[in-house]
Picture 1 (cartoon, rainbow, N blue to C red):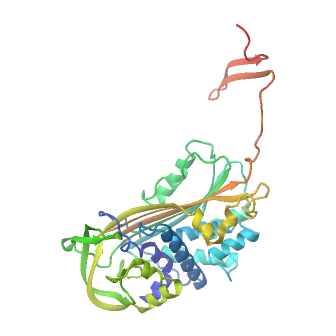
Picture 2 (picture 1 turned 180 degrees about the vertical axis):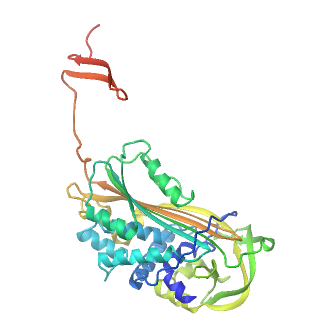
Length: 419
């Protein structure tokens, strides 16, 4: 199992924190996909990079809201930013490389590794559905380098479309795409109206649905006090199961792995601090090296597991945390360099990186979804912007655009004459 764990590290970060940060009750699983053999190899340097970025991002977020639920899809964020990275140059590319931990990898190696990783993640198990979708939406009339678009098509499977962002339903169109890719779990990722200087959205969507290899018996589920960070407790439905599980007893915590699907390649790993410990004490030890040590140390052990049902969503703008991690230049409308996307000036910059997720865990299994949008804007006025002040005599007409019929014609020399 451990060889699969290492290959699936990026995916596992989608689900590992659910039990630790659980919310309320409920749940139902989605449809299952047909089985396809996973790819054999992915560049381990990319998996290492993605894991390091995932923990950097997670720690930055939980430090801001230590008492709140957090649920992120590092895979989604990495994919969306990697597509954007393909259009970065100079200091901006270097900053993104550092934050995304791509040091030592060329852009081509990053792209090829992500292409392999997508193949592996999308084909995990006959009883697991994992779908990854990418898209680029460009403002109509704004051209981007074909090389930039083609790399995103080739390596990330991205759909590329032009869209009139001034059209009232432009955000609806993109949100519908996200909703379809996540089976309705992520809605309204893009908020209308779209800013007049926005010229590009890079979107990623991840959908995950899997049954436990051995389901929990609903008859064993019972109400148990769940202890909250403020010292209070609340009655909460907890699912129970006995059997053999990958198990680890570490320094101040217990951990268990619960496998999904037919072959158990994917699992949820739950880390529980000891009665006298806190999540903070666990997080102080949590880094990529320790994570890999823990994963390699699980042993099949007979025991009993009680897992809370959970169902909650999460939404955040990642601008501040990405700036704090070192990507500030990419958000700077006076310094960002995305000249790999299209000719500059005008300068392009990241206006917002927005992330939304959903997770639901019950006796049958887990359903989770995540979506990320990267919004690119111009530093100044939109392309082909004009200025027209009607301060002198003018001609006008009123026309039925459907038929071309002229309803009125006028010539104005004095807008407010005496009548």
